[in-house]
Length: 332
Ligand code: ADP
Ligand code: F6P
Image (tube, rainbow, N blue to C red; front, side, top):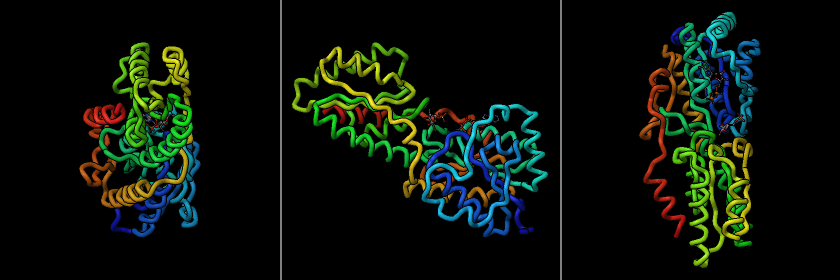
């Protein structure tokens, strides 16, 4: 028991889509708490596990050998009823019964709203940004993005080997339902000719495909035959586009959807280190009496914001210069 700390028992949960680096954050939260004389309880499967009271006293052994693993050792889930006040009140009562007076939530925007709801019910909460999509307004870094991009990049490099051997066009679909950050980074890192992102898609698929066909036909005059298109999941339809391109250009075209392999795997050093820093900071914020905060990374520094303010920040946009640069370099 640490009488200097504003909280005596910290609970940890992971919520929404898992992301590589979440385990590093869990480990850092737990070990920092223990170093400060604070108890730690783990909550399995996000808000669902909280409502099911799937809660355990965390021991040191739980945090051993997890920093290298993808996924989340606490498991994760989505829990739609948690949007309702009745269930938020029930969850706060469960936390109080368990003696949990501080909570660290690792997840995306949706999970932050849950943390905010619990803060309103008197539980001190700090959230950490965990999503491979990077689409959180208050932070330039999210846990898992770096690993996901590196995983996708390695897969795309392999596809390039076979596509260029056959002078083929390849469309590779990467994750990002609403955000094109993974696609943009993979496109630049892999030297793609075209990068398709939801932020710049007006919904007109025939026009999009027409432009791709124009680019490929132009390329026929050059010595470089293969053509790589990175398509974000938010635009989708990669198989259909491949058929249309092949029919219109005569260039053999293959589509690959990378899918969930991008969300797994051992985290990169960056994800381990940043997630660790964020996990420690979350505990020190709670120990200092903070609540309803979200940790972020901006302008080279770890920062924390009020969740309400963080959620009302304008949606993060793709850097236009980066996108134009990628297009210009890919077409040469
Ligand atoms: P992410 O956290 O990755 O954005 P979701 O949007 O699926 O993922 O949210 C994860 C979980 O957070 C939801 O299943 C739900 O339990 C909780 N949540 C989402 N939105 C809210 C909300 N408005 N109020 C309370 N809890 C929410
Ligand atoms: O983790 C982010 C994300 O991968 C999105 O890019 C994707 O659309 C979504 O999660 C899919 O997750 P699920 O199938 O688990 O809902």
